[in-house]
Length: 63
Image (cartoon, rainbow, N blue to C red):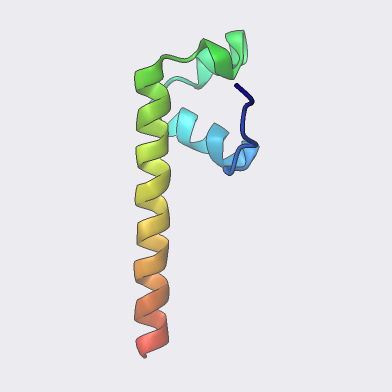
């Protein structure tokens, strides 16, 4: 099975990993070393950030 190209930038992934507290694992083992739960939490946080950005954008457009 081929892997898809990632959508999140490396910078965003690093920022979220630091926020969630597992960036040390990434530094030691790379992205393949994180737990699937951490990866899921990372995706969840990225979605939350995107939703917040869209909500803010909508508010700015309504002004």
